[in-house]
Image 1 (tube, rainbow, N blue to C red):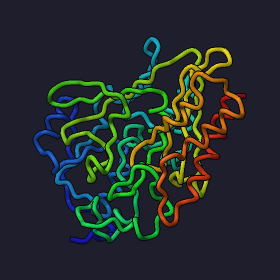
Image 2: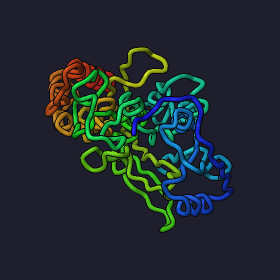
Image 3: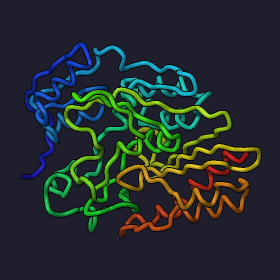
Image 4: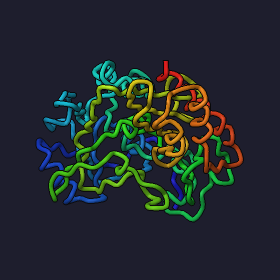
Length: 329
């Protein structure tokens, strides 16, 4: 069956639980026939074009405790339904890299509505997946991007599917060592945020590991006194567009030496791509021009560009170099 792009959703029933427990129970009852609604920026677009057609939409907006941003000891906890505008304004001083990433999502209007949880869990933006092509991710037997127009696609981690993670906030949250809290019928659990995302090799039909009866409730980011962080994104336009590539860097310094380094790339792989080889060029060393250049070169090790996206190699090097230079100042 082909994916047909049209302009009105199929009929669905809107459910409005008042508690998290009720929402989880509804998710369990209806399974894959239901979808959770947060800010709606991704889901409503999918409903409109019938890329997804659930019988039930479970609105999470009336559930207390899913919004808000609070400091808790040596950490900041962000409710999954906090808007991206709220995240940007509330984290500028403590987590400048996250604030910058939130500020680069789409447009002010979308940031006023879109939630950080939705930004993390949004589906693939591949035009072949969202258009009238029946690709692997949609249940077909081919990746049209592999031999088609693939300027925006993956140079790392592609396996039958070469989509890229569309989230701007995911790379910096991975770099900061964040954890997410997930609630299901079995109870509450906390997982490292990099364990939230999946790859085509593991599951080609989804971008994350949440089940239909699981709700992402919050993100917790540790605060470290000597930490520096930044996020740099390159897109065709400064507003609206998704990243062609991005670099998120978090460093923990000890005098002039980098004690811990996390470099995470966005827009180049099906999930946030942690560049451990680049990190090794910085950890335990001075943050000088030579080491920064070595890290930039290491960041593209193992890349496998497609026919039209080899430019991402130079772009990734430049983004990593510029991010590290910014943090060295």
